[in-house]
Image (tube, rainbow, N blue to C red):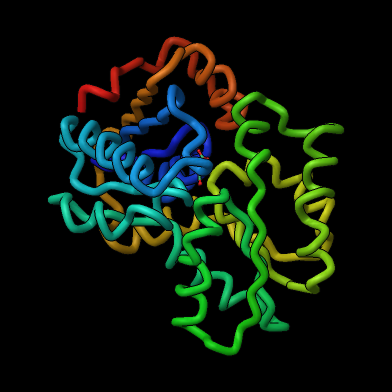
Length: 258
Ligand code: DGL
């Protein structure tokens, strides 16, 4: 059984891909909806939250954990790997590999939360693969609240994309890492602001990496959802994204107890 966590809805981009690649695998998802966003918080707080999220998943008996959150992957992964008794898959290396393989003009842009951009983790991972690649980064702190509040399309996300992505467009980068797992939910708006750019979905790349690591396993394909705030709010947005009715299927937990 695989555990997947994020601060909210974003990790569903990884869950969706894992479920498609290995439908028999049992999955447990935790969205820390009571404490989202993570990306504007200090390193210490992100590490503390991430350890509690992982402890909850371990209490359910998972044998691998996907950190389906760019912020935690870039800020807390070494700490989690040091302390957890199961394999921990993050989103940075798989996305860096995909971006390096995709770029033709050797210019890669990375967008993410403020914590992710501050960490420099994507730059390190890309340059470990190819030192000659030019990298441009931009934090987009409004994107996560937009997604969590259901603003997936229309005027407000469009203006936010224009505002945050101007520098990326001017850089001429041909490949863009969506360094936050929430961003694929507003991919249409991002694509319109950056026409012709190849987008790398970090959650989906991590999912492919996971399946390569643990293989395809036959379980009953059960998927369970847990959140730290109102399950009905989560279910409404998650149902839209997954194209499946999740009403009544998400359970609330007290994450501070882990
Ligand atoms: N999905 C998380 C990420 O990938 C969102 C972070 C946040 O809560 O700010 O970074």
